[in-house]
Amino acid sequence: MALDPALERPHTSSDPTFSDAVTCAFADRRAGVQGTVRIGVAGGAASGLVLVFVDGEPALSHAEGAIPIPPDPEGYGDLSAAGIDHEIVEPHRRWSVSAATDDGALDLTFVAVGPPLVLSGDHVAAKWGGMEGYEQPCRVTGTLTVGDRRFAIDGVGQRGHQWGAPDWSRLEQARTITGWFDGELSFAISALRPEGARSHADEVAWAAVARVPPAPPAEDGEAPVADAAPARELEAVLTPEPRISTTTDAGGRHTLATVELWESDEGPVWTATGEAISGTTLELGRLRLDTAFFRWRLAGREGVGRYDVLKKVAE
Image 1: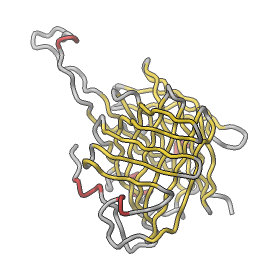
Image 2 (image 1 turned 180 degrees about the vertical axis):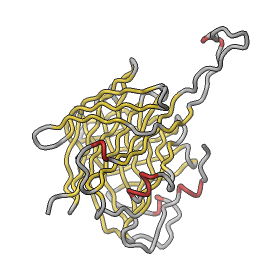
Image 3 (image 1 turned 90 degrees about the vertical axis):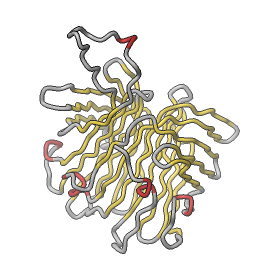
Image 4 (image 1 turned 30 degrees about the vertical axis):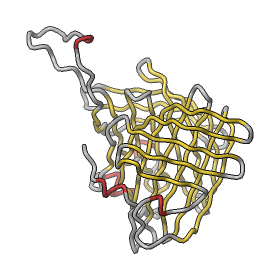
């Protein structure tokens, strides 16, 4: 699915509850590094977040908000928050992301390696959550500096762009779960729990997988020869009604998870099991964000991804 380049611009609205943000997340298993860089607009002001983990521990953490923005910004390069510079090099294909904090800096290039996974505005999850957008699996390269340590980054990640006006009067929590498997497979899940819901079964969810399409059958009815088959681009497939099982610790933070993504009642089914390898909690006024990176295993593959839980704080 080709996306309109105009979607790359920050969306704005006169609605005071409207927000727009780009989230760039990455992980390099060899270097033991994971991170998230988020920049966006809400209430007529810009905000930014830089969060990087090294060997499972927070290494960079910087947030800034309520920064004035120019009217009708053309791109995220027009915004300034938390020392972040986000440039669109080629719409929906290539981006540069850098940030400088008191404790270090990063300079990364994100290159799309698969199709966008699109949560359209007419999907029930978008209507319930008030947000629509898309996620693009990426190859991520660049450098990270933490104090006197320097890391060459060559890993996987995802760039997500979401916009809308969430109504937290009807929501209890929102979960975002992603998995990246070296450019050959990725998944994204958005699960919303309505206010008063009793369990995961009552959630409203959207999920999609980017994977290699099945090989067409040979004309003579025999199985195709794998070595002779040309490389095929990944395709995006919606996976209705994702099944999510999560184990939490004494503080309510997610530590283990299993997700099942069925393309149809007949399959195929993608089952990923994972455990948290880094994470932290951010208090955001009346909301709390438990953010974590997970190591995933799926059909003999090992990958990494984000598992974020945003929930209302009891008054």
